[in-house]
Length: 135
Image (tube, rainbow, N blue to C red; front, side, top):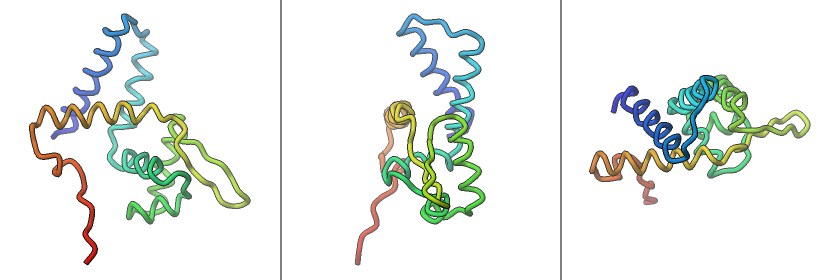
């Protein structure tokens, strides 16, 4: 799937939300919605959000290690999520822990994944990782 196709789907969800709620966004509202969607269009940030959802609080180093990315990359992506108020952080002495601040982002993610499954009419194993078997 191309990135453009994914963005088109997000635009459709925004349009449907607006129509269903009979609300009209202002220009600023559309700009804010587009910023959130651009933020979520990055697979690394989606993986971080999923990891934090499953694990609770994690440090930058733990995020990097679990996602097999460098600490600077994890830090940069967490900073973007923090600036967008999707994650929050707390300091405990010299350690900073990140955690999910805005759970509503997962409603959108679940709607999109469900839509992808229906549209593609494919086996969901191609969309989801399979658990590793212990030998």
